[in-house]
Length: 553
Image: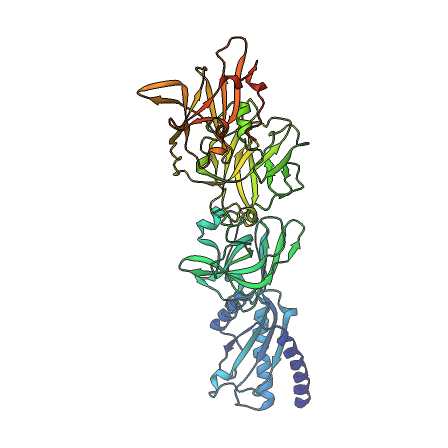
């Protein structure tokens, strides 16, 4: 009979082991009895009570087993071990509703655990416990980390402390010493930056398996982002590329990049910038190339582009951008004669400007007093070291005036700087592109010849150089300490054949007189180094605007 009982017991015990293998969390205790006794002493009941209080929220199952020492017969010891097990079990029932969770076994003298007899007179209580390490979700706004239980074992998740934060501004990055450079010194653009850390009692924890982390987007996902991990370099965080692509996950409320991550600290989705010219300090946003299809944008055949502020023109229909590569619309000698102006009137510091081309915004309407963003392709100014834009203004008479309103490039805007040089210019629509040397002095005008205009006093004499397109007022000559009202100084030039003279005289009340002539065609008095313009060649007009020019062409 005793053998049959033991066989049934062993079958039940094997099933329990299988279950216990699923329940990995166990603890046990023992209480001890005097020889041939099955009565719990106070010390034993206190010990049992303490364990049940400790685990009362987690107890899945209890296994109570009774034991004896090897004194006495097998049958007697089997009965004594049963009494001891029942004594403990009956007390357990007084501590709560544990009866259906409990198993009762008794072994007599079969399991002699200790070498001495006294400690073998015992009851062993085995607790099967619910694992109180638990899955944990940490969230901050749309940032999220899922920590599976036992990620930080032996420290339990519930005993751990977690930090989670995400960054979406340049100020936040800077204040946390987060660089925008990768570990190779290359600048990055970011679309998500997250910090996560687990600790226990002030010490950082190392994960035994990955956490699932969600990185919220700062801006629209445009592709090309890669998962980076932060590395501390002397107190500044730089970024190491993991090579893992950042793929968009569209949640109900949040758009995130989702990763399984073994480490902690800073992580980000970022991408390398296109070029070194993009020195934009903002880690999250930079100006892209202009949208040529946008309603506020107009561009030339060479992709010189203007982005107009709202209200610059009432209607952009009919507004065009033109590259005047040959500077055809600069005033030549004839045009300056026609307007009755000198080069100093419309381009006073032309000697400081090495102008490559003109850029014009053509429109029937006059632009408002606004600022236009001007984009010039870098490829079109590769031969210029420091290209600037000289902003012109339209004169009421209809010609452009270029003084000293200089626009320098707007640097560090973003990816746009890779392809374009960008200027913010006054919305005049008249622009010269080139190099400006503010220290360059105007060449000194040295008198070379005299011009005498016979019988005409108080005339205005304009001298034009067809090779340089420069026009100047010829001053009255000084000779023998006196100002000669009919004699004018002509300045030195490489070739007198390039010089044209235009004389205006308005001393007559009913009409005006003018004459245009090539200097080389006038009578030349070698002894006095003087050219002479005779009155018989002058023409009458009511207004100098009626003058006709052929010699200056």
